[in-house]
Image 1 (spheres, rainbow, N blue to C red):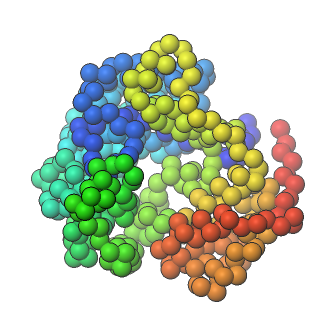
Image 2 (cartoon, helix red, strand yellow):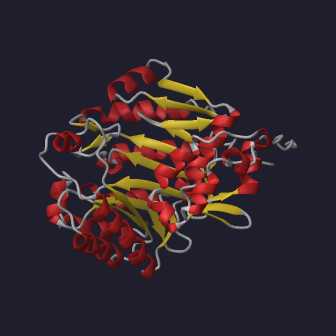
Image 3 (cartoon, rainbow, N blue to C red):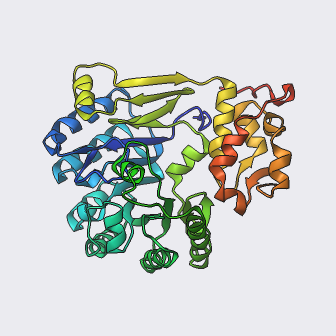
Length: 397
């Protein structure tokens, strides 16, 4: 049976578990703290939302995120995994990821994950140093990290780590220590994020009130640059602005997002992109449970993108990849030729050494990746020429 292209037919699914032991000061995700009593009802609701698919949908990648999915009681985590197996069967060779934090990982949890077909665990270590864990308002202790990572390895699961650089008071030497510690665990994948102060979070409020001082932009840039070189020397190549992997170990689920492919999304606060429409579920756990169990829609925001909006959105996410935008596939996916879409912005970016053009693709240079968000914002202000529009190819069957 011929399948539709991945930007039309979802081949990836995200499942959100909101429960956490602690709400970190920098986090603005849809999380539930102190509501563990809702876990059984939430799993009931999540299973009911999955059942709205009516027929099982085979996918290539699954990602259970949070929150802290492994904060669920083992019985409830097992129920979630069973519901996913029923409604989202994974294709042979597929990738099945779950997020976790060190304090919620142990041998029993990892064995349950492996038995259910999970293939990789993404652990939110954030730092290996006690003073930076404190600055980031993390609840886990340094001593819990090796125990958690050893449990992942013992269960035969692939390991991915998240690290944050630029915490208040952090130095380049601190960052080097964190990278070296991650490399010592022979992680196959590493995500590195500069600390962001999301409006309304406790960390943002502390900065606004002068209770803490961010690292300077120059220091943060130096950390970013150092990370690229140090990880490359350890065999972890940069394949996206913030992500590094050994050969054959990229996060295939996230690559669906960066290609702007379609994907399913289930759970409180989850987003989905199906039939060129984006929907976002309610962010309150109690509201989500109530609506699902009453048979109501849990989408509180819905938007169907125009062809031009889809083209610019595809540009924005694909340019984050080190391989950049493949012009021929971009035109096939969006119906727009890439360069006429942004032609009034390209010369200046080329002259500044921020973009480079190969025979088949347009990519950010290393200097450009440091300024990815600003460059993408600039390109989204471009004025397309009439020559940018192309007829979409006819699909057979």
